[in-house]
Image (cartoon, rainbow, N blue to C red):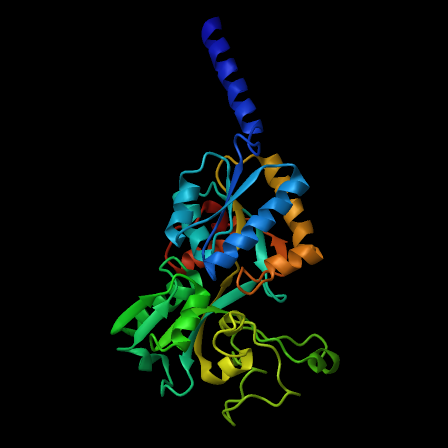
Length: 343
């Protein structure tokens, strides 16, 4: 009996030692990123962010941009307590179920003051497409089947309406989808949508006013009556997928793209993406990394990196727990943990 207890004790000590070694050169933390917008830009920025958080925490962090959305989910499922990531809303929902709700979300994205986002259906303004039903028999451009806004949300809507397509084009990234649409490779594309930003005078004359989901999605961006851009006085800022495409500099300015491409409809809203830690990830290291990310994204350097429209366009982060995603799991028919029933 003593020998057995000694073996167990030594084993527990060895396990504790291994746990403490996470974040070392020999056992780095693996930080996985989805290739949601421009994969080349994501690799570049993820490398810089991981290096900054590593310096701030004294931990060795290895960034990995996944080849597709499914690979990121698999990375969490195969993790041995050393994986963190930036899963999309749909990815996190599926990861949580497939890891028996042992994955821990700690921070949610905040974009332009909003804790949610949605899917937009983008069409050429001269296409003659005036309703979602008009998409039947068209060619659909989307980024990846694992994308919340690029595929999951619009697919739910299309299935509900019985819409089928003549073909699909899988672009590999949100920005690529818009570029493909601008090049006429398909009839419409889907991707993330963002609330329009009003002109500066709105805050001065209407304190506290803000766009909320359900309002006209191109408010301050497009005049549907005159069928043209608003005058400069009434024009706000477009920060959706068209802005990311304009940053590429290959298809005209932002407003030239807005003149060509409009928003047919939106689907949502859903809670924003998050920073999550795999099952078994040490709590003390989670806390250290969370505090570093909060400080980094609030810095001038961090704002430039996290807020890049061809990265993830995060302005801030908010602390969350798994209950943040209860409604989304219900929406897509996934099971929920007991704490969702307590909400």
